[in-house]
Length: 273
Ligand code: SAM
Image (cartoon, rainbow, N blue to C red; front, top):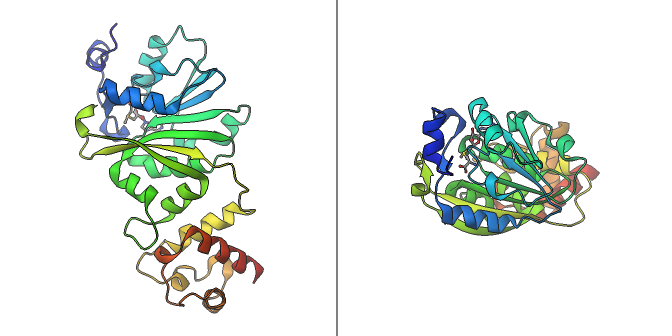
């Protein structure tokens, strides 16, 4: 059997399932750039989300272990046959959003995630993976618009909780832009590959609280921060207003004007009050 995606589709009589965001990578140059960015080492454990027909998977086996998570039963059958001889391959037939990834990764170190993410769940998967404790890096293909949200700075249209979460947990590198022609079928959007290198920093002591605060602050973009945070952990509007004034902020400020540092201050002040 060749490595050609079209041959696999024909041989296994596969339907391409739009509902699973199936756009298979066919461009060898882009595949090579992604694999180079992952930088697979012998003692790595590589997690691939949505391996599809194995366009990226085939180049990951220098790692100690490759764990691939694929929702589509039909593709799982193909992958089981295609990589049957690989002793360091584990395939999990599941919805990544329903998996307890922390539990799955608990025994391992040197963990790297790679994915040509299904676009319909890219933000949800990113949010879930960024919060993992023992991750080294994450190299992912995303639609350009999500890429812009990840890199966005305060007071811009794309800035939001995904920007804050990404910039808090990782150093970000753009690996390459990817044209729609590099996939079968062609998606309606252009893509970008981003590498998230997880920061080795002292994390904020109550991250759960911090990111609930960030999400709640951006929950209604047109409303002021005070209105978004009304009843957050039972705190009154007046208390939030007082905290903003203590921090020299306008009481009518909106979340998009706040930097990560502002949110960290705000979280501290709210907790103290
Ligand atoms: N990695 C392959 C490639 O680059 O050619 C396929 C990428 S395709 C954009 C996305 C893959 O994710 C598909 O194989 C799809 O079936 C799988 N997928 C979609 N939703 C998923 C989910 N919730 N959990 C796990 N895999 C999923």
